[in-house]
Image (cartoon, rainbow, N blue to C red; front, side):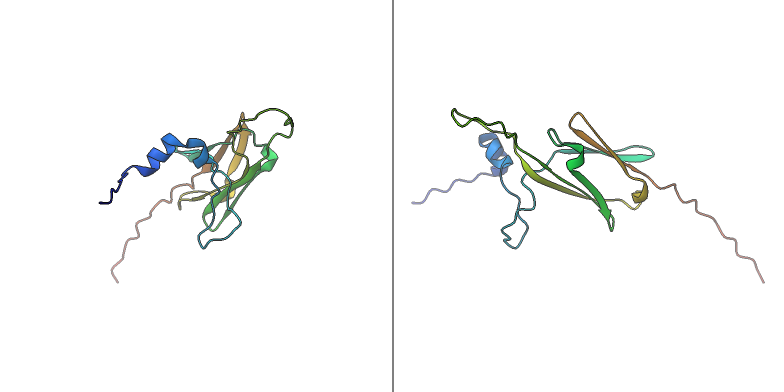
Length: 147
C-alpha cells in the first residue's frame, strides 16, 4: 500500500520551513535558459492616490546608481544589482542570509498613467517611484441640428 501526502498549502509550508532557501533561488525564464533573469525579487507596495500612483520597493543595500528604471510600451521595469560585502575573513564561520545579485520587476502601467513624467527617489533603502495620472478627459456632448 502506497502512502501519499497531500499538502494543499505546499508553498506556504515551504516558506515556513525554508524561508532562506526559497529567497535564494534563481528565477529563470520559461524555456529552460541557463541565465537567470533575477537572483532575488524585492518586495513592492503600490498605492493609488488622487493624482498619482506610488510604487515603493524595499532595496536595502542597493546604491541609487545601481538601479535602472525605464518604461516601454506601457510597462515599467525596475532592475539593478546588490553586491556582496567583500570584507569576508578566510578563517572562521559565516552565515549569510541576505541575498545578493540581480533583481528585476515589471509592472503594467494603467492607461491613466503619465509615463512621460515619472519620477523616482531612493532614501534609506526604499525606492519610491511616483507615476502621475493624466488629467481626466472631459467628455463633450455634441448636439445634432435638424436640416
